[in-house]
Length: 415
Image (cartoon, rainbow, N blue to C red; front, side):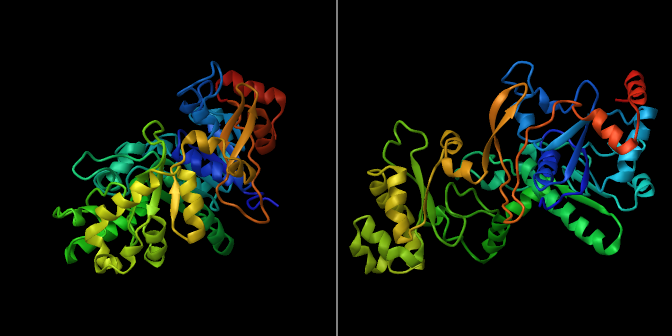
């Protein structure tokens, strides 16, 4: 049985952060009704379009398993439909600019009057404070949340990551908040507001860097490469290149073919528990008893020498050969997998992490599936809806209107 079957979501989201949240809920079986502007729809339907006159991959990969209706809540007739949706739905999710719903006449107070059980969930750029009214996009969130300042090579410009930790990361946080509020409502009978700020979400994912900021007051961060290079630390957590960021030193190392393949690399961690195995694999058994390398603490000033020696070995092997050799010895390594390799990885298809979906406009395409697996509630990924595809169906279901009444709504511009 679908885990969230029977939960009705009024989806007022667009672009990425909000749709990520509502798509996750839809994957778990919630009935997600996506409300879009008549004739326009979510802006991402047309962004980065690769197939003429078809919804873009940007839209289709963020809006699986949803129903789409077109509705103008600013229109008097549209406002009545919108009110009926609020009355009957469990959750409203939005990521508008601050105050947008208020200007439509649907403030949180008004929503509570219409449906006291409603859970009203919002994505914001910043939480309360000096910047709460500022517009925020993915890379702005990464910069304001601490990710960019700690990403990249030491001495070079701050770098954003390809992972959408600002948008999709915040959507995932909001989904957890919604499910928690639904659980609370089972006991209290009341809805509540749920909010997730993108800056907050990024910072939450950067917690180990906040950890290191506090550790700096007690001395240098010895597991960072710059310690072994004799480079002094400043006042803030520095950029650390490909250092592991944890208690076990790690780096990205070249593998066989790196000079022609930009992804012929592996991540290699010198975990203390398997140091003896590492020394034997790379042909340095004498390091096992060498005082310079005897303990994790002793090895920290010599990380550059250690990883240069390991890299000389990894460069003689493909990234997959490194994995085949090291994993049976419990040495933590991992190949740098390209998006092409991931798209073709059969095991990800078998688990539903990547799925192929058929779309009436664009044909078959790949999309991400539910990354969270429930043993008794498997997620089935369905295609994204066409603009307004379910308008009549939803209005009949929620408002009990006739075909003639629906035609009148179209004529008035309400839908």
